[in-house]
Image (cartoon, rainbow, N blue to C red; front, side, top):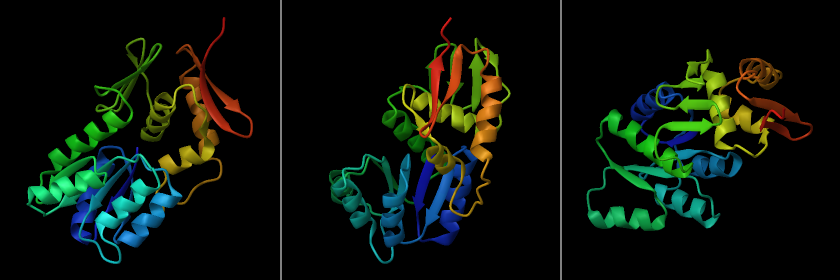
Length: 223
């Protein structure tokens, strides 16, 4: 999943980036509200982790502008605010959850997972499509209960395809998933990944079809 982390404390931002990356998320980090607002306009994020006390534009205004654009991006707010009235205000502005500083990284991980499950409407940490099953927490993929040998990037693409089952996944969506802003993007990365996944999914009952000019679609083999 691609996550936007908005935090102006450099040490905390680095610790949160590492924790989110270790949970197999692609993380973009910005340190002020204006950059966050622009990033949300440019990229379709799966989740935003948002500090409230930000320079240039505070977190409340970032959240307000996001919801005014009718964007459904889940938002986990981080703040040292203690008053219940402040939390109610943030939830009314459109926050999905609130985590009071200081917090344990394990609780952050649990809340992020809960928000992503809710956003994609699956109650547990598994995704299934026919004979394919994904264990999201364990980062494992099974076909008929037999584990597949997938790299981290291959798993991320399979997860994206299953979350958008029945819909075309574009090349740019895959690139957004795989790379942060600081990463260089090899021109043939997506094509190489798709080629490898086609071979690995060959006996799953599903075919990874190229929709010319649009992207890729998982479709059932027709006998």
